[in-house]
Image 1 (cartoon, rainbow, N blue to C red):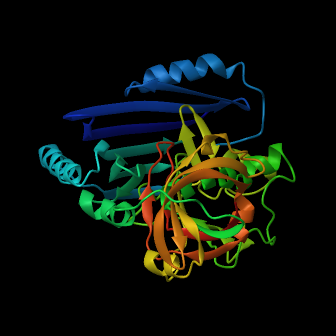
Image 2 (tube, helix red, strand yellow):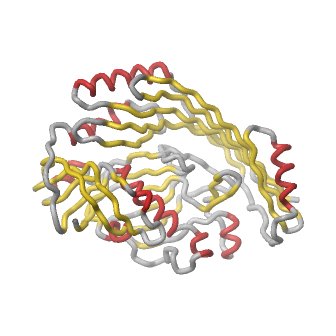
Length: 401
């Protein structure tokens, strides 16, 4: 019998601000098991560290599984640690001070800041011997006032909140409402709305399971799917990422996998099972969601360009900055089609921000990437809470309003 045991212990401490500061602390521990016997595979997950209970549940479902010639992947031995400790009291004082300062500027502040530390362990009869841990800071803030917007950002270390917010605050203060531009314009997407647009379509198009279940819908190696300014890759070995792992959730060694290089498709992401079905090898992209393994990215990164935000804005004759989107959760991940409300949109005329507006925008994610005209030089780290992370800059593209 083949056996794989996965253990996760996740500790979260932080503060929330909804009228007043509220500290919190949470610990989550889970144990998952996969078994293969007589060509049948079963899996089970329990909250806590009771491996025996997980094994029992897996055995109970084993006889109902279909027979296949699949085997657990050959695992690796990996050790890593990138953790830090943070003082919640200091964090509460920093958040309270920032809220007071922004309140005086007419910018009400609310949201949550937390420190997350994750400890992973994977063992299998096929050689996996993994122990790793990493920490990160996760920020989700809502800034009110005349131009309300939200920001999701993170850091692999304790970062100053004002440092994360200041670039956005400099953009929105003192603006008035104006009419949006019409026709062909350039749009600059901030990292958070860009993440909301990319998440579903990229995950769909670059998963090996899409090639198996929906042939023809996956990205094809060698095809042009974006501007030459766009290079997109998964990099779990980036020491500054929010998901820093040397082995995936199956115990397979991870690596940097390029999805798009200068606009051209380079390959897909595979876990061990989908790779086996397709006659390929795992790319180290087995991600555990509950008791199941999925093929997905660890840390989706859009390679930064050479221009800072001021330079991206300065080259726009007519356009806007999308600081927020509503309705992105309804986009069609299979086609990339979207219809959203941009709110707030900061209107740009002749390289200067002239005011703010709100309007509908329809388009296609892949056309957006093909029409990219500029990529920012600074990466924002984002953890959306789906076991994956992002490293994204500002992106500028041509759109039609």
